[in-house]
Image 1 (cartoon, rainbow, N blue to C red):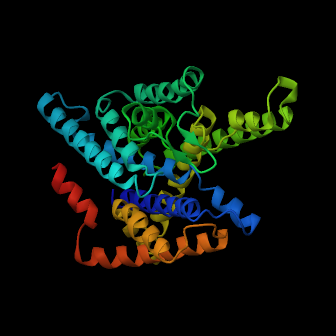
Image 2: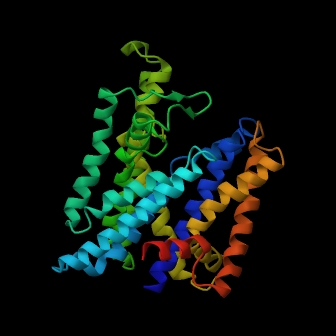
Length: 359
């Protein structure tokens, strides 16, 4: 169990690092510099955050394992309320972050938790079916509602966020990480947490399916875009072709959800396997301790990281080299801080506060 938890924490650290790379790039408006580095940074867009959410689903499964098969309704209700309280607190903290960082994930993350509280006792098969339904609802919403409403895509500014209609639309449909379909990642993570990932046989089977899914999805949609070209044969623009047949995070169509989910499984299984093989390696130790402070470090990268960049005048028209260097400095400091902090405390600062407020 310790090795298993270690592997999950390593994956959580990598997810945080990927989010820092993406968010610093956006915050610093890094649009110039090495094309190779630009492409490297783009690999993390929508992938690191997907892994982060899947890991949250795994955490919920661990939290609910004892009551999942229990017939004691009061115990189940207590666990559900604990999850809901955590979700509400995450929503509140996330909304406080939003004026500072509009691409915040925590307020979405909290709603995923509330959604998850309703399905903690369903079967494994039902979890996968619910995840698929949540994923497939989104294209129908796109046909019904205007996905572009409130967006200024040139500045990534979302207008009318604080109105009732704007907030509902943003959280559930067309925000950065909308509940429909992003809750599918959390539910899939809940299913994944029920699998015995300490078993090499199960890991290898999941890895095989994840690689097949990733290659097929990415390959098929690459060929579709290549075949459609500029889209004139179908009366579409090149921008519309890329919008509808992309596997990128915006819009979060089913092909993106499946591709990002598959890549997350690949990374997660690699982390678990390497942590089991090298449990005492200094890199493994540094990463799993960093993963234990994921919530604290998420908050720190917004308040301290971006705050420092703002003080230094680095939040406008920087190069990708400066953006990645800033992310590297922050991630290095995060590892050092995590290792030192956990020498004296059992939990990170924000993790401890959350536990006290939701216990």
